Length: 456
Image (tube, rainbow, N blue to C red):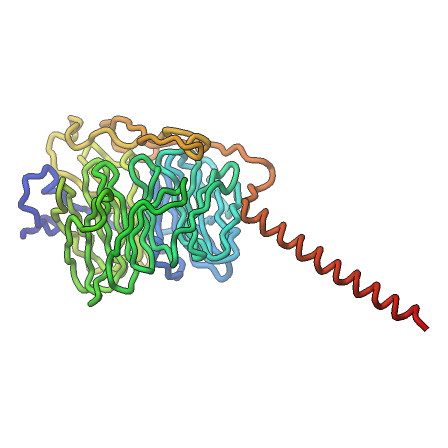
């Protein structure tokens, strides 16, 4: 083990990424005076970012508020920072649209999911009018995730133990009801026709949402705390992080085609924080950070197993982490990943770089294979109609990255009224039926009273 700056390098492999090192931004490049929400929710990473914006739950006395901050606006953030407002309960999860930088989805304790459009240039005042409200879940919605292949396709998971898939321009399309307990995480495979989930019942399930069926199932980590899963799409491996019976933190690697045994087991430590996981499909690098920890570990996933490359130690505990899309990376310094780390009162950008002297003048093609495209492969209608396809890809450029490199925007074509889900329609039918029964009972009571009054 040897040290390079703030990084502890641990790998003795011949990987091209064995010397990757992280560099946290200095004070003038940080987002300071953050007043983040104190909501506790193990399913969320508490911060999200794309090529233009940073989003985090802001402290609020009543319902939920989400601050959306331009990435250029570093240093001190004002206490009255413009926020998305409208949820009547705390916001639990949020994600930027992968094909439209100006759209973001939020899910809340108020059982709804909302889609918001960020004005060009960012928020200049509070925004309390969402584009769409998606209703259908009956309990708090703790996970919302856009589909990485199909346009305007959103997946949500709720404490009602269901997963719903939405065409956000139309409304609810599918309900998956194969879970028996709280869902902790959800991640799609390469083609997007299956996803993996982890649950409080300690099961790991590979699910086909379009048939509402479990394709494979295994017992995961046996500890009582939340476990997470991520699907390494191009490698077709599932990686889970959780706790053992003695509350020691563990990482497992699985082959989704053979879930009856693990490919690899890695023992981490005895810290108590729930792990946050991020996988870079271009470098096959896994990043692990625990809530309440200061450290970020990073690994490379080979054909057979994970190999640890290094670890970034820090004395500052992190509340959340977000990984920016690859198009936001600065290829002129051979940046392979960029993170936003949420601490108690600030957000610190962290740049992971692969040292190459020639990167300033020459594009390092071996470090940057074609990445997932900012354009969808299919429409939501195609996906719900049964089509399956891998994501589009696009070449990386020799650029400093940022908003210009990955900028995309879109408008949603929705009716003037918010989409109505099948569940909501059935609920309204039940209310009408109940009211009719109450009316019939009242009419019978009135008839009886009139008859009693008319009799001598």
